Image 1 (cartoon, rainbow, N blue to C red):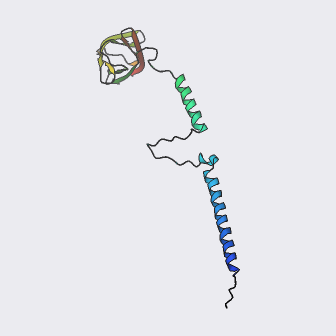
Image 2 (cartoon, rainbow, N blue to C red):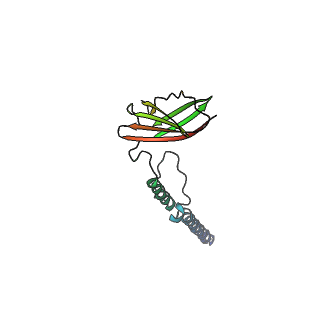
Image 3 (spheres, one colour):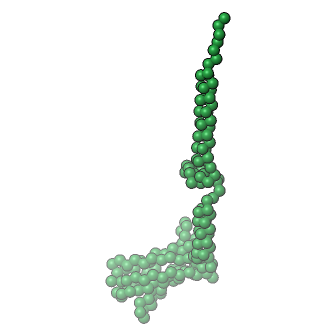
Length: 175
């Protein structure tokens, strides 16, 4: 008859394996807690690809930035909000001739443009119609055949469309 000795080494191996599994589980739990805890999620948030939507809650900084932008927008003056006509103009003096360009914020053929040029006691007034374009209108053009004296001038363009009006001014120098 053969006597089988129980080996004590089997119990040692099992104990070492159990301890190793417990250590691995504790390490995994620690890594999960550090990298995926709620307090760290906002700080470690990955950048989303362009064209995707981030449905997570806004950060405090994002909420404040939105509130600041809203306040600036509400306080800003909007050209034409008072039912006036928004007009821009530019002057160009080249070789003694004056060129006026204009933009009117609406598309219309109705109305008048009045150009007033002033230098001291000298006042020159010209009128023109309005020409509609694809996205805005412009004054049809002014012919200033008078030889303008050298010096500083002020041009004022006034546009009247129905009962609404708008104007723009610019100073220029004739040399």
